[in-house]
Image (cartoon, rainbow over all chains, first blue to last red; front, top):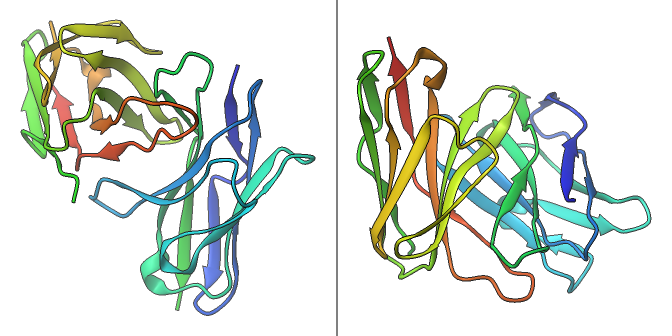
Length: 115
Length: 115
């Protein structure tokens, strides 16, 4: 069965410093992995996705994530945080077992960016 | 641009009322999903549908039902609302999955309060 664990429920960084949001996954199949972002009072927006092509995936707004099979990790990074990055971030794994299109969400990480 | 709309942003209902949440997508997606989002729990799947009149239970279907009479519309029904159903409800849609690509597009959410 697929599952995903976000290792931090809350991360606080200063503007201009690097961002690291950690995610570990468990999957019986070759996984598809996603990061979604949710700004306050907004719907979820796809940041980036890994679908077995390049292991380093670049997304929108300067974010990227690296798929590491040996570590079963898919951590999200950004070199320099901006105030507008403050939001909740979800690491997501697809349930590829039944071709149903189901996604399994982590618990979420709230990113706070201090001026 | 894919657009997923939900009938209400905020809704207040009384215990025992029957509640309808509506979701419409304009991208001819086969799959549609209903989630509820609670702090610290991420998104949990209530029901999903992969075709008109087809539905499958997700992880937390108790107390809910769904209806999909047209491809673009997916309704979530709370037969008798209870206070523990106070939550944010998110609708999503996606193309029928083949291989490993299951990106879902989300609506803005409905914040339901049951008093």
